Image (tube, rainbow over all chains, first blue to last red):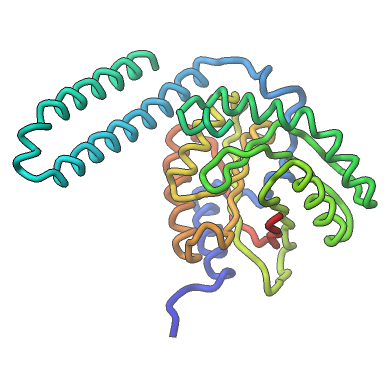
Length: 108
Length: 189
């Protein structure tokens, strides 16, 4: 017997949580009023700048972590003899990656 | 377009997607109308993420027989070398259907600029959703449907939606949301 809840049970529980937080919205996106004009004309507020910086910093941190783990995985695949030969090159690569990512962070 | 997206050039990818939909929106309207489908609303300034890629998306509301809506969308999609189209119909309260699916709608309640919209799309993707529709002009609405292509159980879908909302709330304190039932049509072309 499955312990999975039915669609109705899942939806009811999810929406009950939204209601408990005072955040429930019964509309789907096409039922919400549309803003006139173009998205390109939305002014750049301080909040928008701050949001953008936050999202980019989050993405860069994710990419940095991915690059580090990929390098680590590569190091683990190489045997001891090869490791000695390529460790220096990989270290240089890691430093270069950190430098480039650091530059990007400074540009956020 | 997806070259830009993959390279993290999100604003460039979004600009290209908007340029494509701006050029073809009148053609989309004509395609629906030729099949007797009424176009109640059509705006090209929307974004879609499908299979982790940014895709041209129209914020379109139509009224007509399902077969004709699907036929028109399929014809238009094929003409533009698309692999798939997605059409959603919301079920009314108390209504049920054997093919019903969950869908979550999240409203950020802020005017969202293009470059921020695409960063939000990336966050949605990181939350495990390979597909999402984003309508920045409608109070910053994000819609995600529980389609087969997500490869998630219902429980996983709800958990991922809750995690995404938790993260978005830190930036958008006025955010509202709700889960509803939909019929989703995703014909491969």
